[in-house]
Amino acid sequence: PGIGKPLAKDPGIGKPLAKAPGTGKPLAKAPGIGKPLAKAPGIGKPLAKAPGIGKPLAKAPGIGKPLAKAPGIGKPLAKAPEIGKSLAKAPGIGKPLAKAPGIGKPLAKAPEIGKPLAKAPEIGKPLAKAPGIGKPLAKAPGIGKPLANAPGIGKPLVKAPEIGKPLAK
Image (cartoon, rainbow, N blue to C red; front, side, top):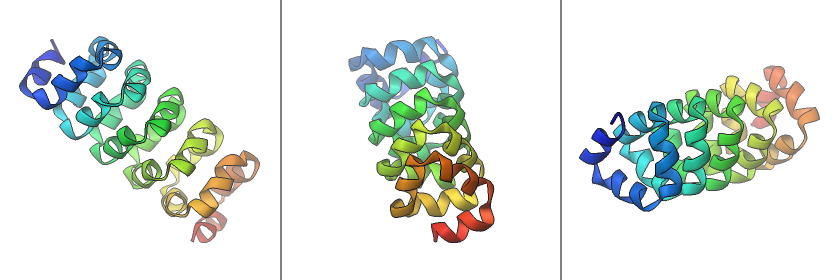
């Protein structure tokens, strides 16, 4: 009922969710996500149409909850299932990212960086916590891409914002 009520009031989300049982089912079992999602049609709608993300997200309330409250990230993420999927499986990154829309937003729009980052929590985690670097990096795929694929470099860079910042620019 925690989800059903708000969903019933917003057919825009409820309808596509009902057609995507792969997402709807696990979401219904995770009211912690479903509730805020149902109240944030900007995310719920595209998510319901992208069951590939909804399913793993519903199983990872640590990400789903903050994401649902941060439509600025949720929306582009829902449109980029290849990032959303890997992010949902890596709560260590997803959580701080969802709380740092300054990074999450551009990352979600740049799957070529977001994808490898989501798979490399040792970079993604500190990046999400260091918006000073994360922001410009997400906007500079030429750097972000190789960095995300080379955790040996990415890790120390993120911890040294005085280098990472100018590099990203």
